[in-house]
Image (cartoon, rainbow, N blue to C red; front, side, top):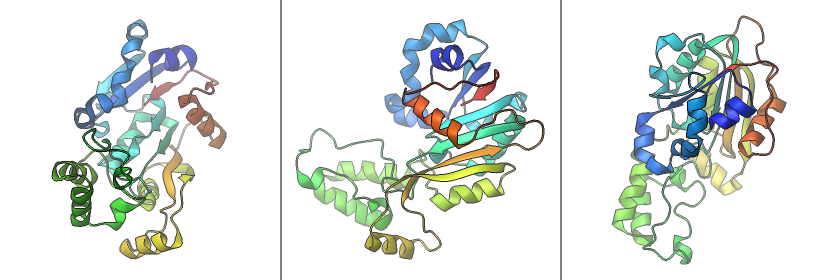
Length: 270
């Protein structure tokens, strides 16, 4: 998020962005981290208050511990491989009473949880009905790796099949956590759970739902595309009174609909 938004418009006291090098290297220009080039002047103007850390979240230096009022994350948690460890580091970075807001999707158990960063190559006819979609909804969960490979080979070619297999099943750009896994990790963390919601419903039909539940025993939530959660480090005062209304405002802000106004200057880590 640009400095012109978070410092000038939202009035944050400071803003620290964290970017994982491996994720950035794999996605390249598809990573929105590179879309703030036009904001260079504002970033330089707010030097010291606006900064980027190019490292994995769990490796953040301990001089950041206890320095933040709010950790704000959009469409990120599904990419964190060592999520339990990352959460503990986030907990240490917050001041007592500080909060973590996260909304992440699509997650692995969603209809499009494969999270493919690639589309159909231009060498294929995209008007061909057999090639309009790479996966059918929940196809990445219902097919085995070998079935996926054969399917993509048949409808596209071997080169593209290899690319799809890599990004879907092998790449570390997604963690492949199911909906229930996130709640389990939150419950096992040092955080207090203030709010937890499943988001963006898209439910499978009864046949697909039964097949998914049979294939993945103990998992039942396949109809949500993502998760919204507000977690808090206990102790201290309630620094930021964030609930579902504020969470909704945050999402709208990313769409450019409204601005968020904090009652006091805060230090934020994205």
